[in-house]
Amino acid sequence: MKAYKLVYFPIKGRIEPIRLLLVDNNLPYEDVNCSSGWPDSWKPKLAFGQVPQLIDGDFELVQSNTMLRYLGRKHDLYGGDVKEGAVIDMINDGVEDYRLAYVKLIYQNYDAGKEEFIAGLPAKFQYLEKLLKASSGAIIKGKKTYADYNLFDLLDIHLLLAPSCLDSFPTLKAFHEEIANRPNIKKYRSTDEWKKLPVNGNGKQ
Ligand code: 0HH
Image (cartoon, rainbow, N blue to C red; front, top):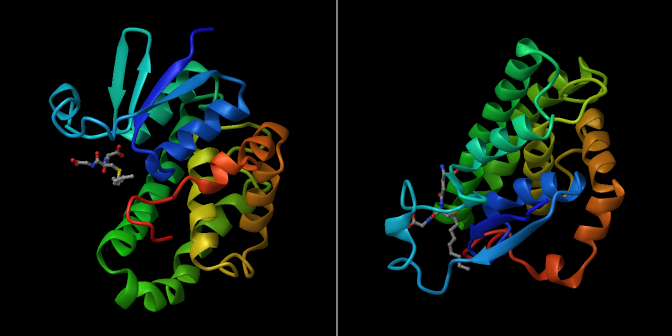
């Protein structure tokens, strides 16, 4: 199969859930670093002037959640019927809401807002805990979904920010551990290259 191309800055950021989906499902990809020539050689070619961008042959797509859903449809990671698909979308939309709050903290209010942000995490994570608990610890019981990778990454970046943030949420903690320990993902995350790649563009995490 032809490798997907992932166009992004050399950070984890919004591309990381997509990389994790590809890695876990043995789907080949190559990273394309857009930082040289940014913005002049890139922005005019991008549908919203922003990355990440997924290139699948002659098909180009932006918007990270659209890219996840495209790969979900293509590679059977979108549940078994419309209702499962809707539950997956709902949880992914919730993950996006929490990611936007995280991004705002990181890029706009890190020093002044970190403590209050961390104190507010249990009020958010209780909902995710309840949703996963009701489905035997998964987004969809017994099935991999595209949203698994986005939720995993969301939990992962919050664990970096606040290492004990999942201590009161055993279902979320087990979900994170299960995905982190899948062989392809474990290997991918064990390299120096991965460890050195910043999470965010401003060095904060
Ligand atoms: N809704 C879009 C999505 O989900 C949001 C995309 C977005 O915000 O795909 N893209 C940003 C880059 S992600 C963008 O293109 C934020 C990381 C910024 C770090 C950049 C510096 C890295 C240096 C190593 N931003 C550029 C722009 O809008 O001109």
